[in-house]
Length: 152
Image 1 (cartoon, helix red, strand yellow):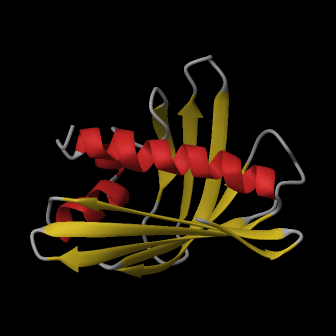
Image 2 (image 1 turned 60 degrees about the vertical axis):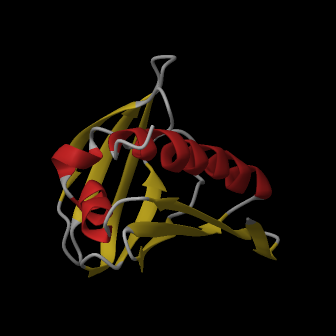
């Protein structure tokens, strides 16, 4: 779901449930060797240049698209609650220099033997940016992460 908060502030929220325990899903997001195996839309390969998962820690991911283009994503971890929540900034290092730093919150909700992941991406600068990120997040959650967790 995309929500317009103002003409230059859009929020994207997606959720997906995986039939695995919360700790396993949280580790897929916070362990570099695991994240590198699934991060990004289907067909992308990610190399991790930096990933310091602690409050104030930085990350830098090089996302290699099927067409050969590399998208560089950087940010900083703002809040980490083990197995429950991750909050981090999100900034494209290449491409549109005017693209602002945005914020992503990942909630890991315990559903017994399953885990619901809620991704909330705020401060997106336009509806087009929200739609582009909707495509990327949807593919990542419903394809890449699902395959990594052995659900597809």
